[in-house]
Amino acid sequence: MGESGSDRDIRVLVVDDHPLVRTTLAELLAEEADLTVVGECDDGSQVVEATARLRPDVVCMDVSMPVMDGLTAAGALRAARSDVRIILFTSGPADHPVVAAAGADALVPKTARPDALLQCLRAVAAGADCPYCL
Image 1 (cartoon, rainbow, N blue to C red):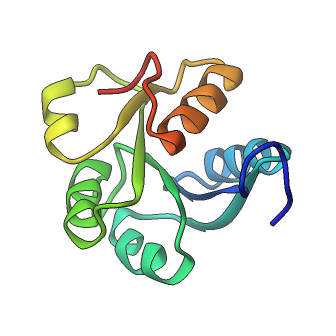
Image 2 (cartoon, one colour):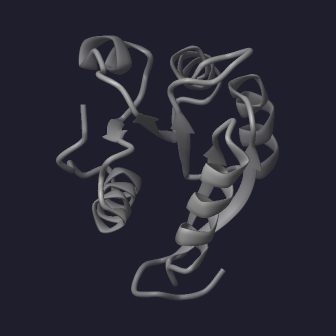
Image 3 (cartoon, rainbow, N blue to C red):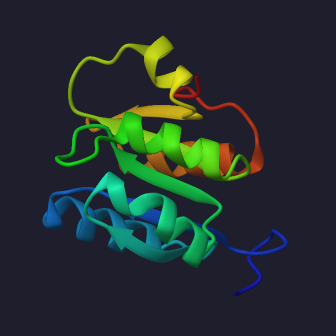
């Protein structure tokens, strides 16, 4: 892990059922000097095991996925590992209280600009607020 103005890189796990979205997001994050993509999952049911194995600081996860959606996965992840930060993405309207109750730290619309997402990710990792924090 490289030095980049902070103690260490922010380790990120990307979770989305659409390969193009998942790959694009992982590539965007990997281009940042202070972020390291430690893995990818294509379903919420893989998140708890992947988090235990890969030890990310932040999980960036889609709300709408087959098998296990992001809300259910966030709740399971929060129960298994309370220290990991969770950012959920949504393409539709969201019920913020439901998302917050699932244990997510932020809810980012898929219409957000990449720089807004990056700012939110860094803020959530640091325990600070961002415009999308719950």
